[in-house]
Image (tube, rainbow, N blue to C red; front, side, top):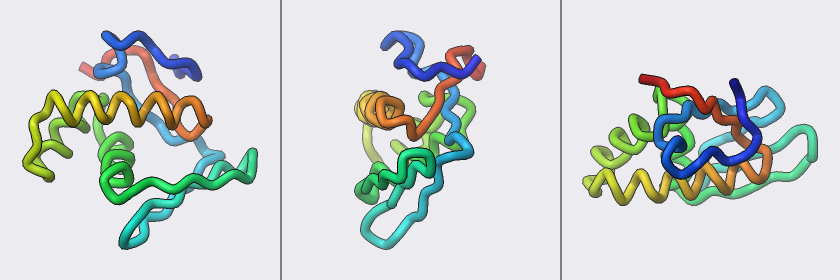
Length: 105
């Protein structure tokens, strides 16, 4: 079931992220540009947030994506997971992602 509101903090790490059809993004060397085709608004993500968005789209859940990014950047997984959950909340509020609140595991 896709949710448009933020799930509880406890369930967010096990939620699956999907980029809706009305959202497109392009990675550039220093940032990622995300465009909501329904609203015409574009949003800029720094390079790290852009990497997180890519990982979120590929992973079965936020926690799995955080593990991949933590390994890529040699950072503690718990810290990356917290940052990723904050990013998800911000993207969700702007209609740029949807969350499946059922566990991917």
